Image 1 (cartoon, one colour):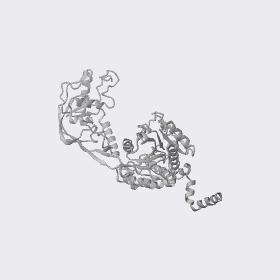
Image 2 (cartoon, rainbow, N blue to C red):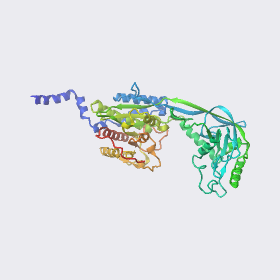
Image 3 (cartoon, helix red, strand yellow):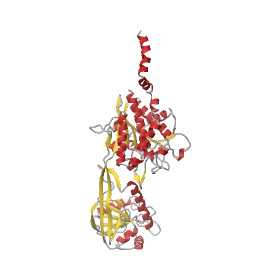
Image 4 (tube, rainbow, N blue to C red):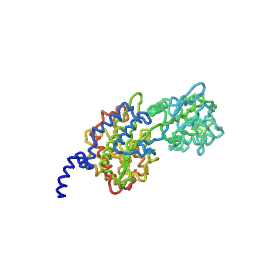
Length: 535
C-alpha cells in the first residue's frame, strides 16, 4: 500500500510544485552554465559601458555608480557582503592623487614651465618660490682618474651638468677608454649623479639633455601626451611613500634652456665638451654661477573608489576560497571623447556577474559549492593594477586559504589573428603555478570546445600580458591563476570600444567556460596543488 501511495503521490507533488521540480532537474553544471546567456550579458553591458558612465574612470562618480550596480546585483544573487562590521560589498581602496600645482623655474626675467620647457626625474616639493644659486660642474661625475667636483663649492646650490659622460674624438668613452659606456651613461644614470651631488651637499640637479633642441622638444611633447591621458597627477596608495617625490629635485632641461640659465650659448656647450675630451679630465668652470627661482607645488587629493565583493560561502571546504575577478574601471573621458571600455573590461565585469548569478541559482536550490567563492570586480587596473594590489595587501580572506584567481579581462571581441577562425580564447598563466589548474582547464573545455590559444603564455612574449592584468597580484603571492583574454584590436583603449562591437555569442561561450572551470575547482576533492614555478 505504501508503495502504491508513493507511486501516486510523487507525480502529484511534481505537478503541484512544477517550478521546484524543474529547478531540481536543472541542477547540473551544464544546465547552470546555460543560464549564462548572450542576452543577459548584453543587458548588463548596455548599462556598464553606456555613455552615461563616462568611461568609469577610477574614483569618478560614474565609477562609483557602476560599483553600486554591481553590488546590487551580487546582493540579488544571494551573495553576501564581507567588508567591515556592516558586511558591505564595497572595499574602500585608499588611494590618493599626487600631482602638481605651480611648477616652474624663473631666471633672468623669464619663466620656464614644467612639461613645456623641462621634464622631471625626481621631485622635491618646494611649496614656496625659493631663490637658489646654480653652479655648472661639467658632467657631474666622480670616477677613477676623473672628477668634476675638485675645487668647486656646491653646498646648498643646484648643480647643472651635461647628460651622460665624456667621449673621446675616436668615439670611445673617456672613463672606460673603450666603446663600453660606464654607469654614468646607462639607463638610470641620473640617479648616480643625483646621489653623488646630494652626498656633497647640493640641493638639486639640472641635467642638460644630450638630445638636439628639436628632439628634446619631441620628448617633452610625448610627456605631455602621457600626462594628458593620465592627468597631471598619479594615483597611488596613501599608506605608501610618494614614488615621484623625494628630498632632492632632478630636472632634465633642453640645451637652449641650459644656455639661457647660464648666460651662454649651445655652441659654447659643445666647445666645453671638446675641451674636456681633449684634456681627458674635468676643466675649470667656464660659466659664472647664476641665480634662479624654483617652485614645486605638490598636491595630494584623496580618491573615493572601491573593489566590489560578492561572497558565496561553501559547505564542507568553505575555508578555502576561489576568486573570480575582473576590473570594472576604464580610462574615462579624454579630449571630450568618452572611452566606454565595453571590451576593456566591461566584458569581463559582466561575465563575472553572469557566473556569479549561475552560482547564486545553484546555492538557492541547495547546491552550494564545497569551497567558498569570492566574486570580485576591482578598481584602478588601468592605473597600475591598484585595486587587486590593495586586496592582496588587505585580504578579506587569508591568502593562504585562497585557492586560485580566475581573471577575466577582455572577452568580448576577436583579434586580427583569429578573424574567420571560429571560437577561441587566449589563456595565460594557467600552468605557471599549478599543473592541476591547467589540466582542469583542458578537461572543462572538452564540454563545449573552443580553441584555447596559449601563445601569450610564452615567457618571452614581448607584450608581457601575464604581468598586465589583476591576476598577477595573486600570482606574485604564489596563488595559481588563469587569465582569459581575447587579444587586442583596433578599438583597444580608443573611444570606439563600444557595446555595438561586442560579439555576445562568443562572450557567452567564454563565460560558460569560466563557470565550468570555477565549478570544478570549487567542488573537487583536493585543493589545487601549487607544483610549478614558471615565469
